[in-house]
Image 1: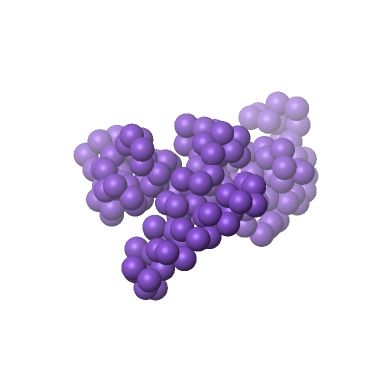
Image 2: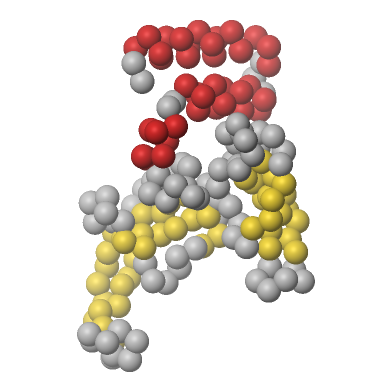
Amino acid sequence: MKDHEIRELVSELTEIVPQYGQTQQLREHIREAVFKAIPPSLLAASSPDNSQARSISIEPAEMAKEDMRAPNKKRGAKMSERYVEVKTFEVDYLCDALGCIGFMRPTGTAILTSDPPKFTHACSACGDRQVFEVRYPTYRRGVAEGYGIEVMTEGKHCEGP
């Protein structure tokens, strides 16, 4: 963003503050104003999977064991282990409603009669409801070699807190 755009954004936000005080509504309104100011091309360029990823936050690195196997991993014997640096990524699902910039959040309702179970989500901005087989936000673990993230074969999706 350019300097004058940032100044305009800050002035808009300072006008919003007295209306709401310190509430969740204020945070949502500020987030909406910020996303309106950022060009869509920048948002699309920052996400690796444009259909699902909206924001990716990188948590501190952790260590995970990776098995070293013979060339045929499925049938090969385990030869040794090594520790690799692993990072966890939070992947949000953006609401599909026209002009909405909210994120889909679980409502706590699950449809258990279907296989696999489906989770009901509501948009944080417009309240639109959708059903997904995956509960968003999801957390993906990947081996961190630079920023070329390679998703591990085990634990591709692990449910977050």
